[in-house]
Image 1 (cartoon, rainbow, N blue to C red):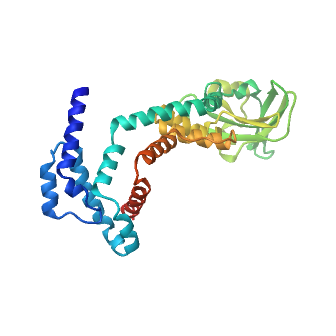
Image 2 (image 1 turned 135 degrees about the horizontal axis):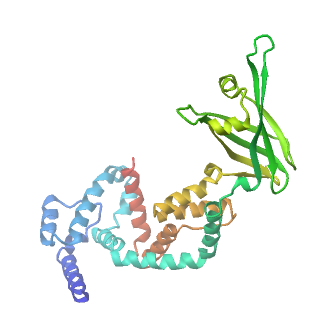
Image 3 (image 1 turned 180 degrees about the vertical axis):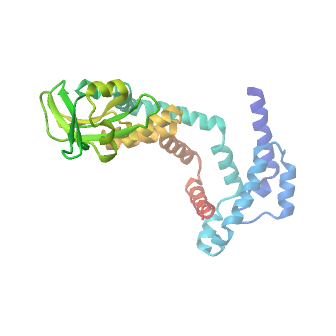
Length: 326
């Protein structure tokens, strides 16, 4: 394998030399169709330089008008040759080079942010591995059905459901729960939401009036008959305990935590790292550099150290990007 790489490298060098008269031209000096065809004809079609040179010619056409309208800028860019840009493209797209950069960045990132990532992992786990069970804080059960009747007709006038609320770990400052019910055979499901903001430190009874659509259904019933004839369920949604809001609702988990878990489940590590940066800044109040950004920075530093025309090539690419994304 090593021998093959040496042979390919030798072939590439010989190729560059063979068409050197074309590659040494300024990028602002367009190759004629004859020169381009001759150059491409001299280059093995399987070599990456073939497509690279062709792309460079096509890219210059995109910024030709921009440079022609700014002679000072064009004169500056004319210091770049086709060889400069071909070498740049071959280097920046080299798989071994990019793999080595990623390896360096990964190690450096781990050394610098490994402990912070562990803290972020622990924060995420606290929401998903140890979910809060609100039933451990308060017990809610149907205690009584109060039915009020019209004196003159005997029809149902008003109905209240009385719920017993029993704190299990101390004072509950607020609670929101929902109850649903339907007949056990062929019944339509009904639901109501109950809220109380009056704190309670011992077992209490709180009442909620039924609306018109449900009072005719449960009016005259008892907790016993409701349990017998209906599927009656109580779901605690939120409580306030020791000045903290607790919930079973995933939507109450911070958005960044939810998104990070989503992309983690999808194995999208770049997006996980993106939300690591968000959480580091917003939750841990510290700085964090994404691994991809660190990789680009290391790559730029290496390219700058080995490329005399680095600043000029960077400016050329910036001009090209502006045209591409217009």
